[in-house]
Length: 84
Length: 232
Image 1 (cartoon, rainbow over the protein chains, first blue to last red):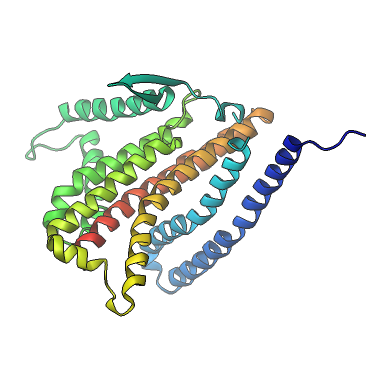
Image 2 (cartoon, rainbow over the protein chains, first blue to last red):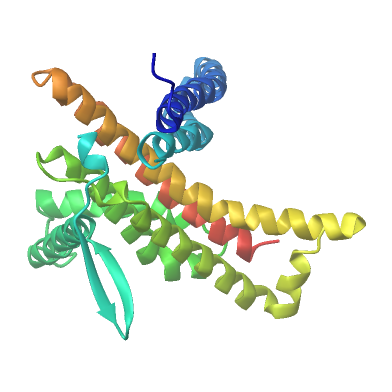
């Protein structure tokens, strides 16, 4: 049986690392954004006339919270496409 | 399109002995965006009527766009004068990013904002502007003192402030870049094995909706960063 060569180890590790990076990195922003949406819904239920303002603020806040998830996406992409 | 990720059309030019490489697709698509914006502005400008006459539908739409932009972005500035000075810049950033994100709906075209160079240059521009206006507002000494606050933990506060300032353009650029590129890759992958209905839906969600939200966030954060540097 042939031994496992170096490049194969690198390829296997990079796929595993990319999957871990994106998978674990997706958990945090999802929880945070769901929480923000819940709070926004509470506010909208309490004061329906503020609906648009609350919606806009919620979307902006969620987009900023999303950024750490995007960082892990970028890391995963770097691992997949840039690492030799 | 995953295969296309590694392929770029790179044009290497030597300027003064230094090789400069340009990503042709990014340059051409951003020129296309600029062309659309400038031509659109010129064409819409022709149809404008003086305030006494009743506005046409196109003019009413244009007034609504500018009015909304002014209220959301321009009013975000602390001082009215800074708002009036910088509103064209921020509105341009917003329109450029919005149109760039939406450009990938046209089949065959790629968003210029899917290139880190574009987003990073916009973020660096905002960063330099914020520090420039901060220095103008507070004077060089007052501005430098802002980095040493809070004084109790002196060396630590300097490091923290530096790190915070550096993190701003990085997060600013990477957020937009990651969202647009990630959406593009996702659409490309799905397109390769389900070319019929699903990519259209994905385009609507990822390009239109997320593109619009990210453009709003980018411009809004630009306003906020400049505001933070000028206040305090």
